[in-house]
Length: 550
Image (cartoon, rainbow, N blue to C red; front, side, top):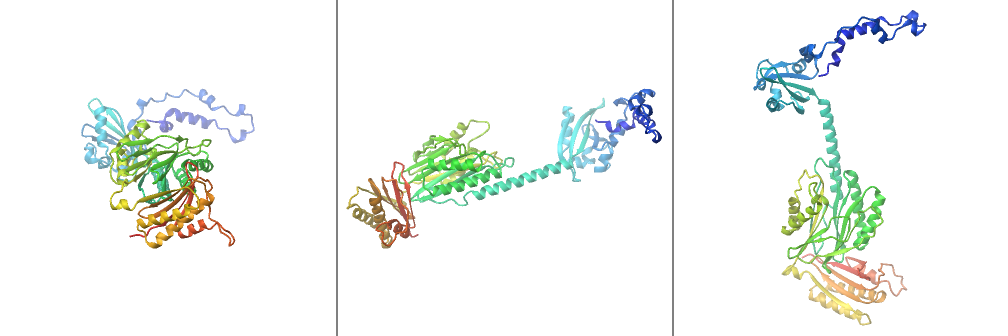
């Protein structure tokens, strides 16, 4: 206990104060030298009589001190905690309790604060205990310290309560501010994620996002699904390092850039190369991991590139889980690295999972152990992509109090049978060039579209588009050439590949021009068209027609 504030009442202190008062310089002697007019306080004390010794702590009137302490003090005795003493501050806060009564009945305020179990612990253990920042019925907050007191005949407990209302209110304001900031970050994060996933013809996709718990600010995890046309689909998942609004804002910029770059229909490693430079421009101190993958139903593979991200997991139609480990480059924003693309089979009946580290990383286990646990969970998960997504999150133990945010993207390439299988067809023709190539292509396209029982108008438009694309390839491309027709339950896709790298572009043909109208015709009659470089060299030019809904 600190008795400093009571030191002014002690005799020695009063005498020293009187000595200093007696030696004050009079006004009529201010001009004289200091050595002639005054004696330093230390000298005065030395010249006066020796003061009486200061009383020891044992000699102080303890009750008088406790009565004047601003903190709340109460003393209880015995196993039933009978009231022996309360000070003035206590009675001012909770009223005057009857002395000698049991505290449980006489001090209901302490019961509401849950203090009596603490008193029992202090009596049993003979060790002090503290109960921090409990709000009393009067609206004030107190921190209670209970100390055992022995009087020879029994054991009592001295209850010392400090008013911490200002600290508690400041802490609550801080928590409210943190909650507000977190809610802002979560709202921003969710608004930057896709509100509705695009639905490719050949894939079934589901995704989920879980922000970190209340003690952790939201991070920069994101995912996206982008239909590229021609039946191909881009799938993206990434994680911006850091937390809070800044990480969410950087994530939004990267996601927007990915969608813009995806329209260029570049290979995955070239997309990551562009993102790497952009990430460094956005914030040189901010890095992000990312996986960009493209699914082509004609190839039955998932072509991907990874910038420091976790490996894609694929469960094949037999139930075996495969891990796509290589190639993996450094995170985005580090620069100086040439990314490379890899591939993994994604045949009908397969399921692939893209995820962020919050799903598999734990403080008490190695990262590889978390990935292996996810592999086991994926091997046993069945059902729709959304069901699998939820099961993987539950198996990883993700709760609202999870210390990191989690993003999961699940895609299935369903194995179709029966009537649904008839809605997905493929047909291809190898073209060697020459004058007979265009008539062969028209005849082939007409026969295929007739066998697929397309209506006359769509049949004629498909034959015209195939003819124009083949003619364009014959004039500007090089062998080998290939015409491919593909139908899904939603669209007809016509694609021509050749060995030339030059991508066609739509232009306005002048009246005297003998060429330049083929792509313009295709762009006019089709729902969409595009071109891209093929992995082995050359290009592919495609167009698609939306099928009428049944």
